[in-house]
Length: 326
Length: 282
Image (cartoon, rainbow over all chains, first blue to last red; front, side):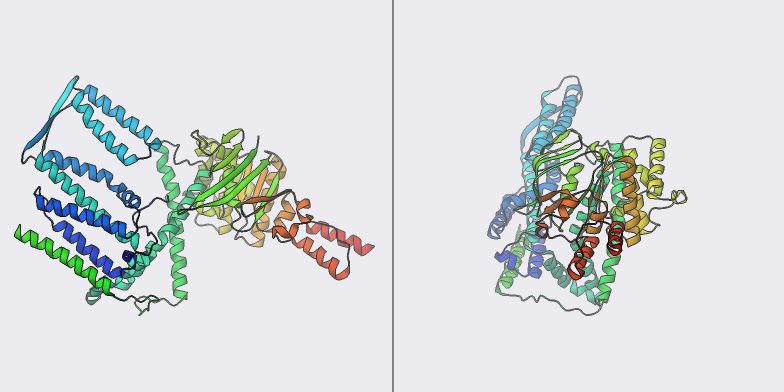
């Protein structure tokens, strides 16, 4: 329950931590736009740019004093997506030079082997420490057994790997990784309260078209504030229901449905009660929706903030230039 | 049998550091006839201790033995059945209610432990009778009754599992004096009629004096006292435990100081009154 990495602040005092949150958020948006503007291609220049961005991100991470391990942990939820897109790109792009060609057999023998691998993976994964690598290894093995076990073949298919495909797959792989690293760098170095302030002030222009920005910001900050509280409550209810014989680990799938209900309804009831209590507590302390509010922290744009904006704008300009020229 | 703690420590994992919740606890709890109060400050590890008693938490060091089942730090066997033997009622148990009707909610526990529908219903009705939930309420929603009644329904949900040992984590917290008295009477009744061991966390020394036979005092995760309540309140270092005295003893101490009455410990109001009347006659 305590291993939710995305959106976890790592305390520190690096220059990235001290950067104005508004600037940080703005820079992130620019960087993301820049990363997505680079066209997917197998040409040398976009790939070099992508790798350069990746290296830049690594330098940023190091200079902010964030342990690399934390960043890699942040990639964990998208390992499946990464692998999937990589293989799709690899096999469906048929341009350029043919590198290797595989014959795969969906045969009785290979389907059996795949099933065995699948069962083995599910059974053994709890003993393995490096689960991502293990998952990739199993995926590799699944293709491997299809190539080497042609006995009693039912269906054959051919997969050709072209150099374009390989390069594009690699390109997309690095792009997704970059995007995740950028976003997690922001959340690692910015407290949720600061982040919330940044969102509020960047959304301010929307006030002109009557969007209740401050209400949205308050909702957002309360939501973020209550995630740990609700997790704690959930854990408590889980234990209480475990005392009544619900075991979320040892039970069959059929029983799991009822068990999840026994968890969901109490948590639902508690969150409503909490919301009501909080609403009352806020009103008692004079909160009025839409009234003008002051802040305890005042943010000032400094020299390094201006520099940061300059650098990311330059980055975007270069990428747009490359796009126009190339 | 019963529950044995052998040099048990438990540490919560925090950011970079681990926090010791309890340390080096050795205990022996018999399966019959005990009424134990666990007392100590907030954060002294009481809740952590009782969560070891039905294997919700596993010790980081040492060993817990529940009805003959070893629970060393790393285990792979199934332990769910132990939770039927040791019923744990959490703080504010009314939040765990979720079914459509009260009866169904009480039946939830026994059904998880492989009782058939009709068996569970019999057990549930029996448990409801013990806690005084009227039959007319059986088909109502558990969210539509009063807080005190919700707590009774939740307690019934544990009792219906027919546990051998009943563990209560601050059962009277947030109840009014009458609700508190009624609920404690229910536990006393269960203890008297079925001779079940009851373990109860509490901050209320009056409850300790009135109901408990044995008291366990925790301070900062360490076991500092384990013995009868008479031994506790007469303990020469009682002040070091930072505990309050129960009201009858407070009255007697004040009388000793103010009017020179001879101090003799009486733990409930009835015997206190009898003693005072006796003194008056002399």
